[in-house]
Every structure is written in structure tokens, then in C-alpha cells.
Image (cartoon, rainbow, N blue to C red; front, top):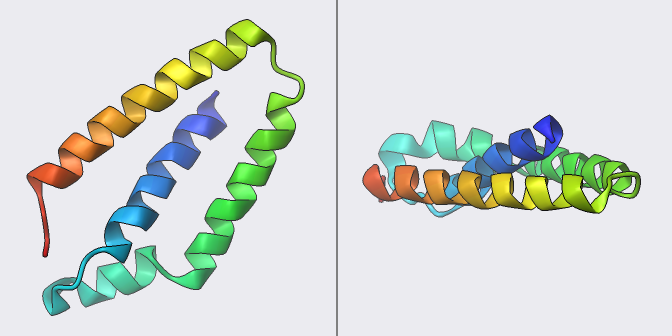
Length: 84
């Protein structure tokens, strides 16, 4: 489950920084939305997909609940600090 939570947070950073157009934050946007970081995100997803093959239905349901909570918190955070 920890890998899924980590993936969710990293994915949020990747998607959020891709939308930032303000030159003041260009250094951060370039780092967190780079192609290399995108590849890293994809690799995390592959690892999660492999791990989920062995997970029970209860474990999958628990991860889904955690995933939804991550997105709720991340969306709230990014909406509170819009950098555009």
C-alpha cells in the first residue's frame, strides 16, 4: 500500500507542475514535470500493477480508499496554492 500512496503523491506533483506557466516557478515546473520524472512515474505504476496481481480483494479495496483520500488532499492542497 505504501508504494501506491507514494505513487499517488508523485503523480500529483507531476500533473500539477505540468500546468504551471508562471516563469517565477519555472525551475520547479521543469524539475517536477520533466520527461525523466514522467518515466519514473510510469515505472512506479508498473511496480504497483505487478504487486496488485498478488493483492487480495480486501487489500485492493483498502488501497482504493487510500488513493481516493490522497487525491482529495492533493487537490485541496494544489487548489489552495495556485501558482499560475
